[in-house]
Length: 448
Ligand code: PHE
Image (cartoon, rainbow, N blue to C red):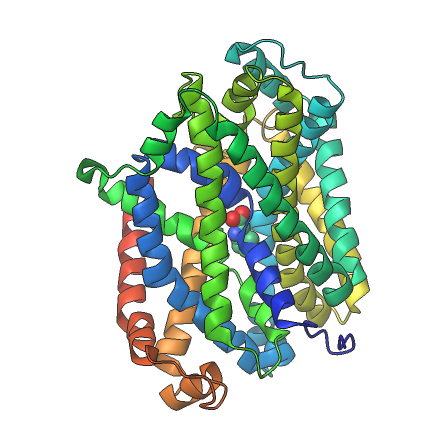
């Protein structure tokens, strides 16, 4: 039976799917395919796997361990005011930074989904210039951007408001399998296209020349973002976990599902783009400009387009609810609110911040921070925040927490076998922090 009072997940599957839902998002469906296309196809997938399994998995497990150990008191761990303020302020700042641009992209998805379904985007021409204009006119229209973004915020908040089990867990239980089924159907259709096999070859190709430090950095950054590491989301989700759940297998499934969906999406998008000789290297515009042109070549292309935007929306909402979930307990604790009051306040914050972000493309386009508009800046800044968060997790579990305590928690007091426990701690203590320091230096170097 669901333990609603304590906000615990009602089942192990519920927890794994919620964590996977947080992982599977725009990072896997929108960003991953264009990173694959830009960084040498299969080579990038290989590097991404290396980073996911070699580093991100260890940090994710550390977050799960820490989250369950601290439980729902994690935000009251400090007695002094400054400590409390920092502890609660961090998740709010981090979630809000990510959501500020994430909700805007979700708004684009709402727009494209509705326009595709209602025939407003006709899919009768395969000239990408037509789709380019649609995208540009969307960005130039503050009202439509705000409206679509607010629709997505409303849907997200509605789920959070219903509660952890009734809202978050149920949504993931339903949406993730659905997403997977639709994805498979679409892949099967695309793979029957003439010329698609070239794209498949590219997705599985390996070329040493693409193993560059730039690709490695992109792979690691993508592994962190797409697995929701370092943000606090996974800490919160695991604070709802019961003591007898196997954290190690939950973390492994989450990584496999998260990275698997990214690879599946690449298998959908890249072969489709290859089959009709478009350029897969169109960066962030791949999904919103190139793909619609690709769909125009298919019979009933508008249905495929609508389905793609539907699965993007499904993936995105399972992530946005997790980001809201990370900010809400902190907000409630900081301002002594109930969960529901905190959710409503946070909804208002999201509306304001995302509206401002939507204006970054039109009314406020002249306003820049470090030469970037606020939308791009929030994207880059969140990379730093999550890397910093991941670093803190490594230090806390690898260096500060007594070894025996960490091992007891991760093995459920010795009842779950964990042969690689020493390797796990070694990665957390030495490898992951060193790699993070190298990436951050590289990121700062690039900024300069
Ligand atoms: N993992 C999500 C994605 O791939 C993004 C996210 C980051 C969600 C951090 C929650 C926390 O889109």
